[in-house]
Image (cartoon, rainbow, N blue to C red; front, side, top):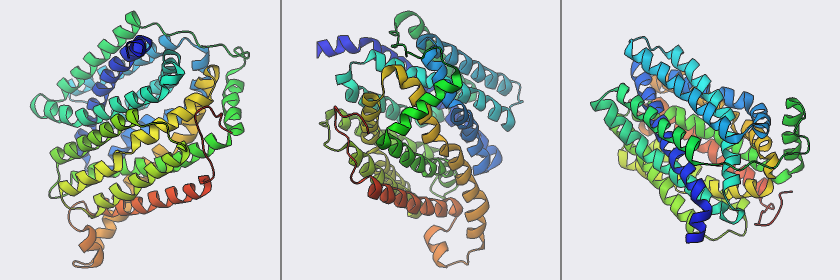
Length: 431
């Protein structure tokens, strides 16, 4: 145990401080979503915040990975974090001047998303360089643990600060957590140099194509990425519709939205602990498919048909407890299959292919709530089947979740059929 701690000490320092900074950023984003929805009442306008964050991520990821493989990982992370903090400072200044408008938030979210696009592949490679191969699954569990802890604490801390101190204090906490992470990385962590590719001086476009070419040669990984792209379409539509549902329902509101998000974090936390204790499965691909089937087949239906916070919280537990198990198995497949000197390029190509559906999903969720099912439910006859199933304030969002549930189960069933003969075991290289 002491030997493992010594090996992981630099990674644990990076993981802890970056997780703290992620909590601060998530609190600001959460508070801004509430602020905008209360002002506009539109699921689509709120979803545009996330669309603007993800659009540069999707469009530029391939090139960002090629650049990340060339650049110093530590300096890249520091510069990107500094630019993202500057965007947060601008939000604070506009708020203090009472001039913050939705379009300001969209532009600043796009700039922050661009910084994250460059920072993430550098961070992924840095984690690989700091962690021994035999500890990949344990550190994947730690990453899921921190992500779930952020999910638990974000709505609680953000709601309390927003209610009692205002948006200024939410942003102040965000900037303080950034400062801790920035200074720790700058002064206390040495990131080893990644092995250089033999083609380190190739052009950016050619370098980006090398990442895509690697994925084309690995059929199993490419199939998994396309499967997860479909899942992300449904999951991001879920994220767009959730505030509209829980802030509108008679038994909902800001506090209930916070509780449901916190419970999903607790479920993810439980899954993160579980994955660190589980032995390596015989078939990691099957585990990925089955955990996502559980998630998609339970939570969306309970959100659609449930009318009480208890039902929504039960849905959150069932929907999120298996996600860390899925992520850890996917992470082991990727980290064990991709050479370290290719990881920046391959991860960025993966990000583009796997996450391009996220802005589409946020847009889809907003349109389904605002333009399709809210008008449909408003025109539904009182006492009819639709009214009995979904009726009341937030009925359009509830009907949207029912459609998302069917879509999610269909995607999982289809890909389970196509991938049923595929397997990946530790020590394999993906085909």
